[in-house]
Each structure stands twice: as C-alpha cells, then as structure tokens.
Length: 393
Image 1 (tube, rainbow, N blue to C red):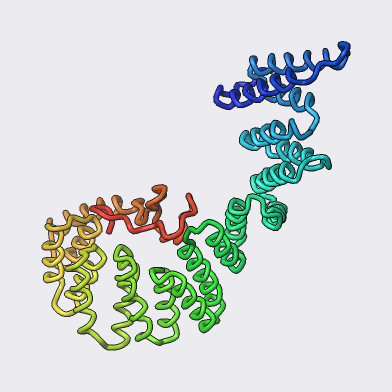
Image 2 (cartoon, one colour):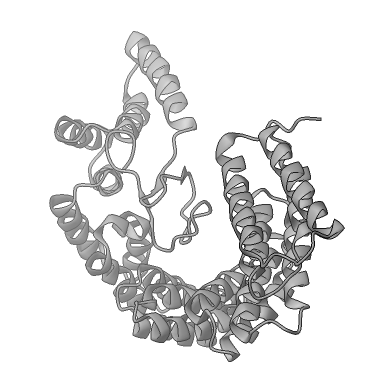
C-alpha cells in the first residue's frame, strides 16, 4: 500500500539514499564480482523505488538492512533514527540508536553522539528516568554538556523536582553564560508554595527570601511573601511585600490591589487605602483600580456618586468590565423602563465577559482566565500578563 507521506518528509530519506549510494560507490571494488555485491546493488535500487513510490517505511527498512554500523556509516544510522523520531516512530528510533551504541568498535565521540540521540528518543517516549540517566552520563563525559543540561532542566520541571531544577539551572548558567535567575526564583517559589500549603510558614518565607535574593524583580515571590504574612496576621509585612510589586512589574499591580486594601483595612489605615488607590489610578489607570475606587466611594458617599465616578473614567478609558460595574451600581437606584433597559444591557455585558480571557502569554499568545506563572503552552516563565484594553485591564 502506498504511503501518502508529504514530499517534505520524504525528501530527507531521498538525501540519505543518495548519501548511501555515494558511500557504496566509494567502496573498493572486489577483484571478482560477488553475489553479495549484486545483492547490495539490487537492494539499493529497490530502496530507491520504494522512495519514488512514497513507501518510506519500506525504503527505510531496506537502507538500514544494507548498512552495517561502522565508523563510516554511523552518521547515516543516527540520521535515520532521528528521522524516525521526527515522524513519531520513537520505538524504531530507539532500536536504531541502541544498535549503534552496541557496537564496541566505534570511537568515543561517535558513541556519545548516538547516546545523545537515544536520550532524546527516551524523552519523546516519556521515559524520563532513562533519559535523565543518559544525560547525566553525557555530562560526566563532557559531551553535549549545555544541551544535556537543558534537557535535564526540562525533565526536572516536568517531574516537579524543584531542588534538582535549581542545581541544574545554576550549572546551565555557568555553562552558557546566560542568566537563569528568573527561572531559579520561580523554582524557589514552587518550594515555598509547597511549604506554605503544608503549613510550614517559616520554611516558606525562607524560600521566598532565596527567590528574591536570586531575582529581586520576582513579582511571584513578593505576592507569596504577602500571602504568607497576611495569613500569619502580620499585615505590615504583607503590605510591604505587596507594594513592592509596583517597582517590580506595574502590569501586575492589579494582582495585589485587593489583598493590599484588605491589609490596610486590618490595620485600620483607611487614609492609606484612599491615598494608594488614587496614586495607582493616576499613574497607571487600570480598570481594577477604577472599580476599587468606586467601591470606596460607595462606602463613603453613595451609589450615585460611585456611578458618576465610573462614567467619568469610562469616557477616558472605555472598558467592558467598567460598563458592567456601572450597570450593577445603577440598577440599585433606577426604576421602571430605565431599570428594565439596564437589565438588558447587563445580560449583554455578562455574555461579552463570560468567555473572555483575562490573561495572555506574551511569548506564544496562549490566553485564559487564570494567572499562570509558567505558560501551559510554551512553558515560558513570567510571560503571562493581564490583557490590556477595552476587554481587559
């Protein structure tokens, strides 16, 4: 049966077939033609025929069968194994690369090359423990060190082994001279979160301090420090941590404003609530600060004053969330037809907001309603931000 494989997948196999033909052509001719030499030639053209008919699986089997693993053919075997892996046929890739490694006559460099590809095969197959062992072996042999460390970092993140991830990230930083402080800070935060959830607050705070010592711009560490201290009843320390976010990343102030105001309330510091909200509103103007200001106006004045405040801000900064809040407040002091019309508008705005994402990854565009410190799609750290504009913050 003819395989419907696209040309861009078949082409690499054609190239390998050509390389194989060149290799066979360069072999020293025997004094007398042998049956074996004719068999090789026949198999080679048989493999080409399979390729031309897009029967790549059969072609690969023929070419692999033609070559014995040796110093001159090892690269071809490795390439064939890699092509299998790219096609998703990881078991075949593993077999080919294991067959290469099993040959005792290979040089150390060639064996390490095959070992590296086999480790990647295991990763693709989900055999993380086997891949981990091979990458460690390569590092001990000083072969493919930066790449092996990178794969180990990925493995430890998948396994949530944050202590090992920290060690590997620091080694990777030394090996590549590239900064990994942001990732390491997140790993410390993961450890802090584990301790916090287990009720070990002091241990969690120690991990948070390590995170901030590694990356002073770690918003996540500041938020965690605020949450832990708030739970311990230490609102002064919590407010200091929350207010630090403004200097670290102003786009994430909306993540702490609510908790910060609660801390000020616990401290009976109503003046600071008003002062800080006005500061954030005037400097950044996010819809979260607008709505929180409106809530304060409701408490100190009345619903109409809060509604008028929202109207004045919507003229400068249109927002669906702001409109929705304005409708909710206005329903309390309207009657008759105006009230009915507002109910219709409320239903419309609720539907508009119902499935709208709140956050978006700046690296890959993944969006959702929950804040992710590591993007679920591209696995980048600290790349998720609140969406801005009329439908966002």
